[in-house]
Image 1 (cartoon, rainbow, N blue to C red):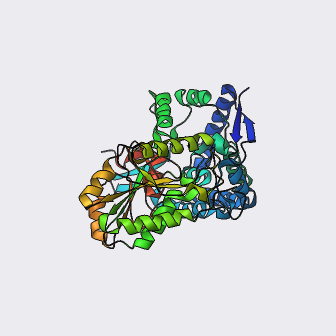
Image 2 (image 1 turned 45 degrees about the vertical axis):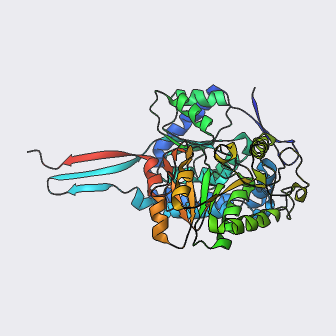
Image 3 (image 1 turned 120 degrees about the horizontal axis):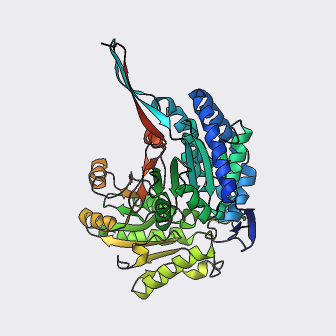
Length: 461
């Protein structure tokens, strides 16, 4: 019997554990989902939308339990609440556009022919969700997948072991059929076996690059479509006409919020030479004001990283950078809660360069490197010198300048004067080693369905 455990970063205790399903039990659950999907897809779209929205309402009602639960499981301070603002925004938008997004594309409706392209649900959508934003990242796929007529099976990361269980409980209590939407506790081997056995019709995975490779290896030869979001090393660029205070506040918050554990968090910043010194001074003041501590304390603004092994990666990056000539600007004595384990003091590095792993490899922690640049061309070259491509944040008063520069950046989303945000009207996507596919927006619905063409001849001659 395999037990899956969540080790709390708060105190290193086993916070939750669940028994992993056997391969036979998992396959039986998949078959129940497949049987339930046909009836669900036959229901009117308006009925599916209403039930999904009721499910989200039921999830909101659990917020009093969810917020401290998240603090225990992955370390986010309770002062920031849950993720329900984003969950509700994305649900409302996807529900609003569903009818139009899923409507047939009409090519002809004449006396002789009716020709159109319909959108059909894939069947069973398998959501393999991460721990850093466990509700938001799940909802991105769950809501449109169910609305589009799919069955959904969710497997959550062990670090947020209870999240899938909670979401399914909420949705089923609101009237979603229990066989249609299921949470599974699976070990890696059983997960791979299910994928290799062609149990799923679409797979959405959010996680590491290596995790994405494992998904592709498991799916090899099955022709199962995959949506992969595999992280980033997102840059910010502060131009000569930027609002300096707004740039500092937004970029440093985007670098440190959630203890830096954001796929689209800012991990490297390039500042035009004329603003560099002022930016760095203000950035150090911003970061120095954080309070690192127990996430269950309302005064804590920076919690532990989700696991001590994640913190070890960031510590190593910082140590290697300093040994190679970088300068660490944050006084560690300001953060006595740093215990050498999951609790990690934030850090701002200057005199960095792209030979350092902290400027090239995903950190996923509370550290950011800041480099001085002399032109847009230099900033562009550095921003593109990266294996990832999720978002880029540009700071200028000139929309045309940002758009022109954005067209040359190898990324999925270009922000101007903001960062670290998912707009549900826009496709959330990436390039290079960040992955492939896209969620949210009309395109999100299209990725969770397949086109089916109808060529109906009304006459026989």
